[in-house]
Image 1: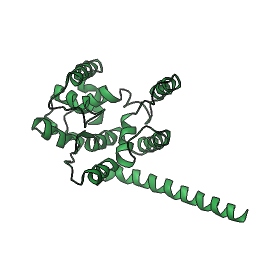
Image 2 (image 1 turned 30 degrees about the horizontal axis):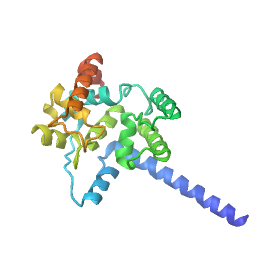
Image 3 (image 1 turned 135 degrees about the horizontal axis):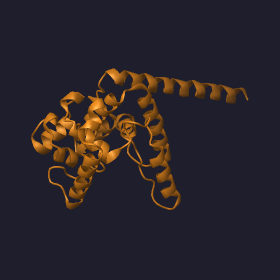
Image 4 (image 1 turned 45 degrees about the vertical axis):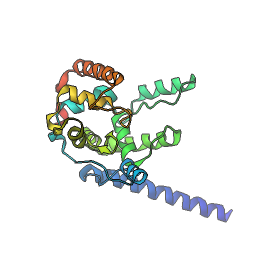
Length: 228
């Protein structure tokens, strides 16, 4: 019994230390740009090569880009608290009906995953992702969440961040992106190692058309002005 109590005590201390470290790291990244991410490290280890990434502040990114990712990935981004409970409920219902475990991830959750976690659809990873997302949304303003997301998201094999993606796919800086170019980049986010923004497949063009429509329905760049 004494041994069990000791193990439990150390387990509680370890869990507390991990939680404290996570909170401190999230708080630090509110002000300091992350030097790397879990996904970038995984790419470098798997491929034994570097990545293309050039950090830019949100004010140097065309407002069409945050609008495009909101339209494509998370239309309640500006109002939810890190999790979209309606989307989660829909995904759980679909899973119970025999479908695969769907993402239902907000932009905040994707930011958490890219920074701290790994790919996959296990309940453990999704649970950690949700916990990190709530912490991020509680400690960061929406502007910072969008800025970090656009700078760490993968837009192609070894291409991370919107500046590197704009240069690689269109030969321009992120500040110059047009509505269509922004939609093309947003369209490849679900699988950037398969889809190509520079040479879109028919499926990607269909997504671009849908995203452009959603961008218009959301009110254009007026929607994202609070982020700037």
